[in-house]
Every structure is written in C-alpha cells, then in structure tokens.
Image (cartoon, rainbow over all chains, first blue to last red; front, side, top):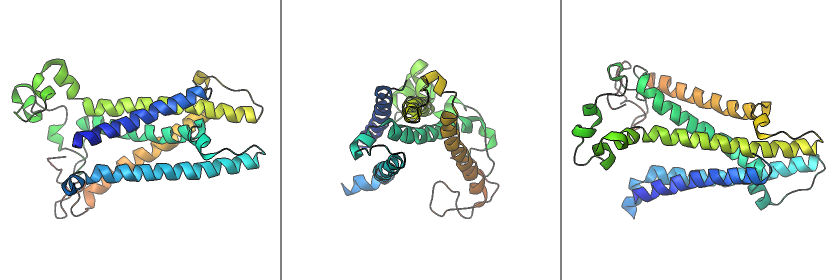
Length: 30
Length: 224
C-alpha cells in the first residue's frame, strides 16, 4: 500500500510536468 | 484502514494539502488573469482554458523546479557538508560517502536490505544515489517545463503588446526567465540555511526534525 502512494506521487509529478511541457509546446513554446 | 491512515499520515496529509492549494492557485490565478485581461481590454477566458494555459503551467512549474532543486542540492550537499549541532547534519567524522559496512551494501547488506543494495555492481551504484538522482531529474524536468511554458506565456504577452516574440533559446536569456527562477531559488536557499542554523539552538518537542529538547547545542545527531 505504501508503494502505491509512492507510485501515485511519482505519477502526479511526472504526469504534471509532461502536461505542462505539452501545454507550453502546443501554445507555441519550445 | 485506520492503521493505513496512521502509518501514512504525512504523505496523505501533504498530498491533500498540495491538491487543495493547487486548486486554490488555479481559482485565484484565473481571477487574476481575467482582471489583467479586462485592464488590457482583452477577452476573458474560461476557468478550464486557464488551467490548460501556458500562464498557469509556468506559474506551477517555476515553483516545482525550485523545490526539487532544494531537495537535490540538500541531499547531495549533506553527504559532504556538515553543520555541527544540527539534526539535519551528520557529525563531522562521517563526512563523505561512508564505508560499505556503515551503508549496509554489498557483502554488508542484511537479509532485509533492498535487492539492489545486495546486488553489487551498477545496480547498487545506481540505488545508492537514487534519491538524489530522482530529485535532480525532477528539477531538470520541471525547469524545462518552466522554460517551455514560460516562453509561450511570454510570447502571448509580447504579441498582445505588438512586440516581437522570442525563440526558446532566446527566452533562456531573458530577464523574465531568470527573474522567475532566481526569486524561487533565493527563498529555498534561505529556508535550508535557516533550518540548518535554527535547529542547532532551537527545539521542537516530539519532532524528528529537531534534537531532543534537552540535547546539548553542540551535539550533532548520529542518525542525521
């Protein structure tokens, strides 16, 4: 169960960052 | 279930605080953005189009990168640098990467040790740095996200002001990019320095971030 929280945290952070990069790139950044 | 909540209180509480604050930031950021749009005589945007905007993305990412920079530097720096008397530090005699025996790796691993601590070779080498490396990796990724979303938000403003947009490499040299980065870094460095120094002389009864209330100021925690 503790491992589940570890995976959720990593997923939120990495998923969030990929989302922000995609948003930036699609809005004309990069 | 009760036991699960108790055993994971720290990660669950801060996870919920994070989500609450992020939603709050989105609501306040949306209102602030629209106030600016009205002042500029531009059209207001919906909440969801703000949430998927480069403006929101750069504001979130610039704070994330500084937090991961803080932890990455703190984790690596505390291998080599100490602060005598601070519970955040190990004692001066343990400066450096320490022996395999102290670190319970390779032949010194126990039956309960993680598999990669027992394996030896490249796996133990990687696992031995995995906490610092993930923080460093997340710092690089979030700084990249800040720059990519930042240039898009910056250019939207440039175009609204009838100025020339900039390319990504050009944006990395702009005052906007460095102002956003450094304003977050300075606060993280001050916070770490404050924690290292304050914890020498001040106490918080019951907190593992503090030495025991009655511990001498000069004592540096062995477990640090």
